[in-house]
Image 1 (tube, chains in turn brown, red, green, cyan):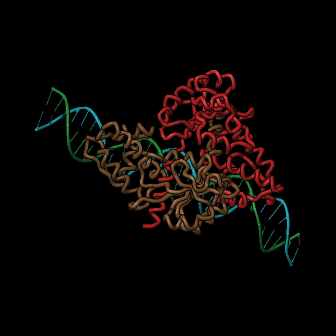
Image 2: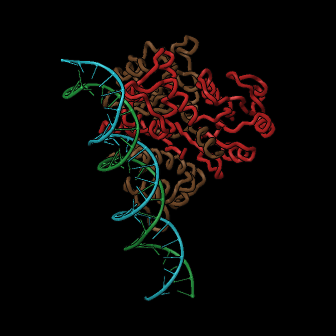
Image 3: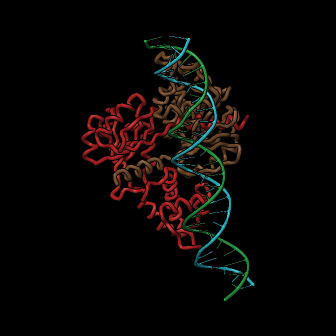
Length: 208
Length: 208
DNA sequence: GAAATATTGTTAACTTTATAACACAAACTC
DNA sequence: GAGTTTGTGTTATAAAGTTAACAATATTTC
C-alpha cells in the first residue's frame, strides 16, 4: 500500500471511532453520506478515502461496519500493537492517558516518566510512572516505540534528542517548542496556544 | 485585509511566540531564514507569509523584531482583547490554563465552568470556577466570546448548542465528538487520539 | 565606484487536498 | 422487464498550500 495522505489517515482514525459507536448501537451497515454526517464532512470525501484504502462495499447496502473497522485497522494499526509512553505526567499527561483509557486500540500506553519524586513509582491514571533516569532501560525493556511529550518547554529539545537515541520512532509533541528529529523518526506537533489564537483570529474577522 | 489562509494564521501565532523569545535574548533584527529555522520551515514560507500581511523589512538587515511582533498583533489580535472560558476544568482544562498563564496575549482566560461541587466557586489554576448552571449569566456579564471545551464526550453536543445560544462566537473543541455550529461561529477541533494513531501509522509505514 | 554578495518581495510552478461530475450496478416501481 | 431511483467507485476539476525561480536592492569588497 502506497503511503496515504496525512489527512486521510486522520479521517480513517475518526471513521473507525465513529463506526465503533455505530456497532454499539447494533447497526451493521452504513451509507457513505451517513458516515460523512457523523464527521461533518461530505460523502464524496468518505468514498474517496475508502477508495484509497481499496475498500468496496456491497452495492446499495452501504458499508459493512464490522468489515470496514477491520479494514481500517489493517491499514493504520501495527499488527502486534505498539507501546507508548507519556513523558511528563502532569495535567496534560494525565489528560491524554485518560482520553485513551477504555478506547479500544492497538496502542498501549504502558509507562510514564517524570522527575517528581511524588510521582515516581506510583500508578497515575492507570499507568506506572518511572523516573526519567531509568528511561533508557525502560524504553528498551518494554519495547516502547512512541513517546508523547507533555513536559515543560525548557526540557523539550534535549528530551527529544535523548528519547530518539533510546530508539523512539514516533513523537507526539505537545510542548510549544518546535522540534526536529532525524529521518526515520516521525514527528507530529500540536500547539494549543496556536489553536486558540487561530480561533480568536476568525472570531475577529467575522465581526469585521 | 482579506482573510488569510488558515495555515498562515497558525504560523503567524508561532512566529510571534518565537519572536518574543528573541526579544528576551535582546535581539533586534532577524533574517527570514533564521526565523524559519526556529519553526523548522523554509525561509520562503516566512517571506510569503509576511508578504500576505503586508510587512516589509529594512532591506538586508532582516526584520525589525519589535515592529514585526506589533504587526502580527494588529493582524491576529482583537484590539480590546477577547475573553475566553474553559468549559470543564478537569486535567485537560487545567493543562490548557497552565499553558496559557504567563504567555503575553490579548486572550484572557477569565473563567471556568464545571458541575463538580468540589470545584465550583474555587480558584483553579488561577481561574475562578463557576457552576455550569450560571453559565448564561456569566458569559453575558463577563462578555466571554470564546470557549474551550474540555468536558466528557457525552456532554459535548448539548453543551456546544447551549453556549452558542449564550453568544459564544468561537469554540476550540478538545472532545472526541465532532460538533457542528451555525455560521457566524468559528469551530476548531482537535482530537488527540487521532494524532496518536497518525503517529503510529507513520511509524508503521517506515518499518515496512 | 564597479563587482560581488546577501537578502528581500513577488510571480510562477508544483504538490497536496477537496469537490464536482458522471458512469455503473443493484434494487425498486409499475 | 423497461424505466427510475439510489448509492457507489473513479476520473476530472478546483482550491489551498508549498516550493522554486528570479528580479531588485542595500551592503560589502576590492
